[in-house]
Amino acid sequence: MDINEKIISLPTIRELIQNSKLLPKKSLGQNFILDLNITNKIAQLAQCSHKDIIEIGPGPGSLTRSMFIEGARSIIAIEKDKRSINCLNSLKDICGDKLILINGDALKLPLDNFAPFPKSIIGNLPYNISSRLLTSWLKQIHYSQFIFIENITITIQKELADRMVSLNGNKKYGRLSVFIDLLSNTHKLLELTPSVFYPEPKVFSSVVSINPLKKPRYEVNLKTFEKITMLAFGQRRKMLRTSLKSIGGSELLRKADIDETMRPENLSTKDFCNLSNTYDQL
Ligand code: SAH
Image (tube, rainbow, N blue to C red):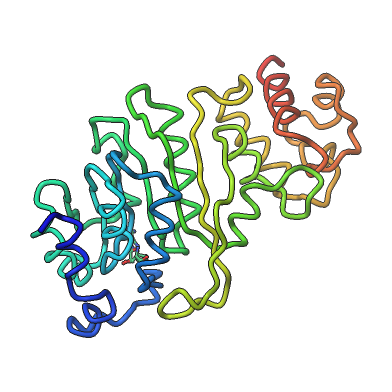
């Protein structure tokens, strides 16, 4: 039997969960996908064939199985829950060195631990930490010369995905949208109904593809950009001359050639970079 046949002959994820009494924990954001047809689709969209992958939160391993079926070369799977790690041991027996299981917290593991690169990050993320994880990865990629992540394909709450890909003028456009736009090419691949998860979450989910850019879309000091977008969107209904008062308000806006009565949703990523660069030159 080849690897794929062995994987397909494993007990189903549903059986695995029942046999090992893996009761999903809300505190760990556990909403498992049981249907391999769905995870196969995600693995195909993530184009994981021949790739080296870092998987976040494999749980009982449906997506992990699908990625191997799709031809992933290797997977490092980081899972906080010891019970889930135990569920993955039978897959580990089949895949050997191609699957490395790490019982740890993805928030505390810097990406440079996972050299050599390039690698891709894939996962059905715990929803309570997806935004933090993504922001942290993009910053690490930005600040390090050595980390090379080709692609990030993650399943997250639809609402978060919508905020990530929003354009200026849209209600959901905010600090996250400009940050993501500055550092990546991002688009939604697929929407998932609550019914594909166990237990069913209250909200819809989206599978999103993020391709980190080698350099930010526009030249800017990222710290300044973050500071200014935080101030501006922190009071999103206020005019910029008010929300940016502590860093120069009207004068700064005039120097950057931006109308002081604008609100943050009127500014594009490029405008925020221009504003940041003007501030740095004051
Ligand atoms: N990929 C699986 C499980 C998704 S649920 C599936 O699609 O079925 C999210 C998973 O992330 C859970 O298994 C949970 O235990 C794990 N997790 C939660 N917080 C984590 C953290 N900080 N680091 C790593 N894994 C985490």
